Length: 428
Image 1 (cartoon, helix red, strand yellow):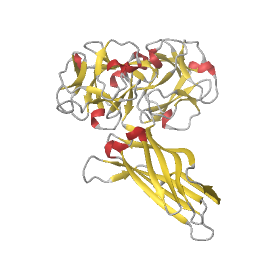
Image 2 (cartoon, helix red, strand yellow):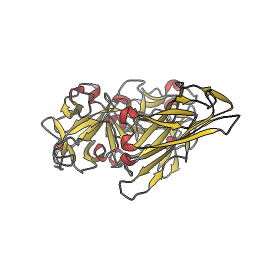
Image 3 (cartoon, one colour):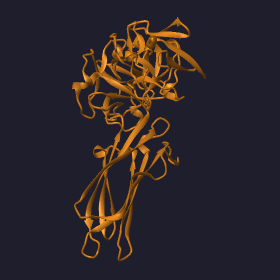
Image 4 (cartoon, helix red, strand yellow):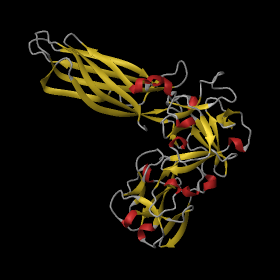
């Protein structure tokens, strides 16, 4: 489902420490030893802590948390593996006959629990020796700083552009561009080369400044992801044993990435995102800017609709747009059998949204297209109804402009409304 592994959060050795899914970084807190205990059951022991996987408090109800604890020879610490074919297994707790289940998310930190087995992909697991773990878990990743929510990119502010040798790395708002996407290439012992997608150059450093460089094969370009807090990692250079951080803990666009000793600060902590970009489109409110029914009264509204069509596009001039959501997916579909008198200045708070998922790996996120449409009608009992249609196009490179706030207008002779929309990334 997610291609991530069962991990003890923060590499904790404590009883009761939570387990969740994390990007596999070769850490011993992500490695487990299976020991047969009879009757078809195994205890599953974490290599780092020596503690075993268990259902919390030995409870049998649905969605109880799974954690690590000292071995107590209890049935809620015994697990049976049932082959499902194609290398997958369901993992069943002896005491409850419920299975190991992942909360439905592909993000790091997704919680693991027990649940009734339903054949879901979130309930299917692979057991794989660490040395054979797939070299590429997804094609590319995005590194997001905890303190700012911004992502690491090879900066276009470099005097000679972002393709040159030694171009520095800084933080910026996510825009899906290839200079914000990174390939991880395992080089053994839990270390990776980190390769910029747009240039093919490797993450390295000069002094304490982090930049992109041609491959050297040396430890200066090898990095390890060390779990430090839930879904967050410090990214440690092998040669120096120093970690990536954002200069001065800045929240500013363009702040550089440097190296220093790890000090537990949020600006040293990074989470890894896949290039599947979750976008939330929220209809915040409708603001009436004009209302006049032509007979000296206000508009009597009886219909209002707002919908969205979302498209991905390859970075090629003649590439077609590919729709990724249902056609004319409603954000709002309001009607009444009576009418609603609305005066100019009235603010109708909606706060309804849809979630979209854009593939920034195969497609160019900057060229994604969100088409928003609207229909509104005023009921006139003495004459023909007044209605209006409106639409607007917003491209991926503009999604987050102005804090993601966008406005378009719907208007006819009897009424006018500003339609206020917010676009943000669901992971924020």
